[in-house]
Amino acid sequence: MSDIPSIFNDVLGPVMRGPSSSHSAAALRIGRFALDLMGGELTHVRVDYDPSGSLVTTHDCQGSDLGLFGGLMGWETDDERLPNFRDEIKKAGIEVEICYTSYGAEHPNTYRLTMRNATRERSLEAISTGGGMIVIQNIDGFPVELKGDYHETVIIVSGDDTANVVARLQAEAELEDIIVSNQPERSLVIARGRSPLPDSLVATLGRLPGIVSVDPVAAVLPVLGRKDLSVPFLSCEEMLAYREQEGGTLSLAELATRYEAARGGITEAEVREKMGRLVDVFESSITTGLGGTSYEDRLLHYQSGGFSEKLSRGALIPSDALNRVILYVTAMMEMKSSMGVIVAAPTAGSCGALPGAVFGVCDAMGLDREHRIDALMVAGLIGVFITARSTFAAEVAGCMAECGSGSSMSAAALTGLAGGSFEQQLGAASQALQNSFGMTCDTLANRVEAPCLGKNVMAASNALACANMALADYQHLIPLDQVIDAMREVGDLMPREICCTGLGGLAVTPTSRDLEKMLEDKKAASSCDSGSCQCQPDPTEKEAATPV
Image (cartoon, rainbow, N blue to C red):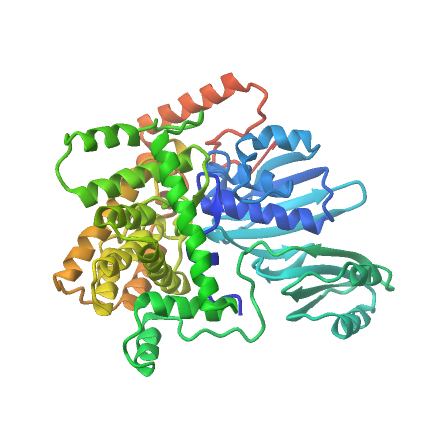
């Protein structure tokens, strides 16, 4: 079951460039799927965004276009060419038409694509569910539910030849599943496996009677699904029971490692090795960010250097751990805003809070690499509980889903770094998430910079405070599972205008509008033939199209 979260799929990752994981990374993965579905050949793509969702007002400025175009060219989420995506899509000869059309999209992050090349036309509908995760919901009119965690061969069959295709697949391929969807005159067959079908079998399938198309689509997630997947627990309550059965002494980091090993079908050593590679990316991002960053389409200039200078000469209020945390959070957010490589943890919009808190405290306490891996494993497990019961998508539950989740994950990690007990770590996670309820996502000028930086700093500071309160045996009162459930209920009550749509709160202040116009004028002046859509079109507009 691919609905079971993975720390490396759903919580810590992807390693990416771009302002927003739910926009940039998810859109890129959707684009990669679309490119494979067209056999790697594209000449024209129409993208429909529904005005009732979030993407009409955010797709340009928050990186949906960047990610989608990169995916349509087959790039990875951290490709160094992403900042130049508009020039590159033109070089690739792919015409992209972006339209605002009401079609009853039920999810705020819905992408509807119509693709063409010299020989065929296909359609695809997909959603971004937060943190870079996606669901493909429709292919050529066939309803599906594909999450990019398998290598999938998509086969269209006409007439009555479907049974023959399925029989051939069952006889000649090692597959996890075969999905069949029927329409009056044709069928969709999807062969799902942990490895691609052999080229020879793909060629054989293409010659069978009734075959319209056979298109291998590569997995886009780092941890694949598999048949009969099971994990030892999927909630905090289940984890407590499992720990008791195992003797009652396992740490949160050990439990997280066991969980991810079971989820990914890999050894515990491989889990820690994977997390170690993320430690390297986090540290590189912080170091590079502290060295200075720049990017033209950006609200906030390089600020971490000034903070570092004042910290070194004692010009700030003394608090070594907290000040390091603020410094590192700022550096991480500046890396994101300059299109540098970061880890979405759990999202790009909240990418500063967790690494800023964990690495700031580790450096202040002189803790080594193994402590950092342990801390991220703990954070990852808390994130699993959140995504299993709620969401990381700001479009669904505001910044509470992003920075609130990051704060909860960080609080548990910091408590463990300070030697806190198992119970204290869970209490800190509960308290930090409780303190984050109702956070709006109302970005200035539709860029994921402000108040995002301040909210990431607040999330990390909240995590540090809650860790210290837990270490001092403050009562958190409400079990973590119940807090997560309440978080989802609060998200459901929040108006869409303050959930990453650019339609309410700080996003619609006169200053925000002025900043947006300033950036758009600057962009137009530097590239008057960029072909980009306006960042804030009228969301009530029923049909508009802009070729790119």
